[in-house]
Amino acid sequence: MAYKILIKRLVPAHKVSDLTPLLLELRSHATTQHGYISGETLKRVDNPGEELVISTWQTKEDWRMWMTSQERMEIQNRIDQLLG
Image (cartoon, rainbow, N blue to C red; front, top):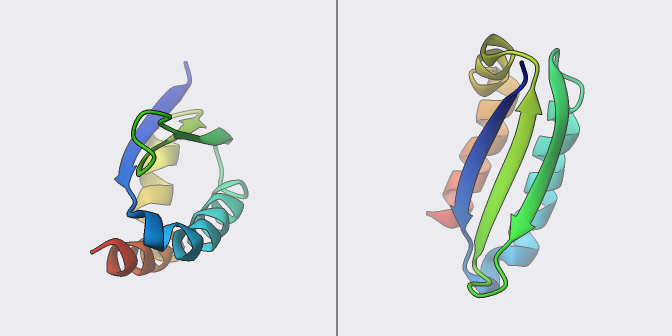
């Protein structure tokens, strides 16, 4: 059974252009991780600042390994600094 991970982000309009490269970097690294199946980013049409990132993993452990990896934490820290 595959596992879907959902991450909701609130992105102020003036930060979208700074956030996009970080999300692309994060996804690029995720695609090389063991157990990664797919990912997508959805944007709400009725609330442009809200995004939902969905990734699919073969196992919960595969996701946990990626979530706690130094590589991911470094990129996530930059995202957190940008979004506050």
